[in-house]
Length: 190
Image (cartoon, rainbow, N blue to C red):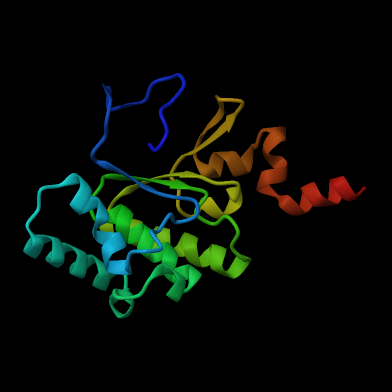
């Protein structure tokens, strides 16, 4: 991460420490304004791997084409749409061929149409590239189409862990407002 944890530990398959098989897509994309789309996507390879310029160019070009960003490679983040920025951020997360990608609120601040487009993009690319998704989101009903398992954290503790289907069938009362926002807004208006 970017910050050192105050406490706790993280392990993956019993191992603790750094996890090169993991990648991260930031909540607000965290693209570098002074770098082109191509440079933003290439950054993790330049920083983490010893790779020839030829191999770097081949990998970045191939991924940019797969995510349909080839017409934007020479543009800067300020010159591209919000949806394209999400794809650039996803390309940067994918460039190291991770097994797991962590998504931090990937739809924050988006209108409903773009929100669904981002969830569709994640679902589609997960199927195409085969990575595992670990996502933090307040858009609970929308993530059900992406996830196999759902965990609900409250005050640092896991209060629910199970399938989306089980959660829909018998939700904890504290989650009903997340699962059905219309009910939540109706009860607060009463």
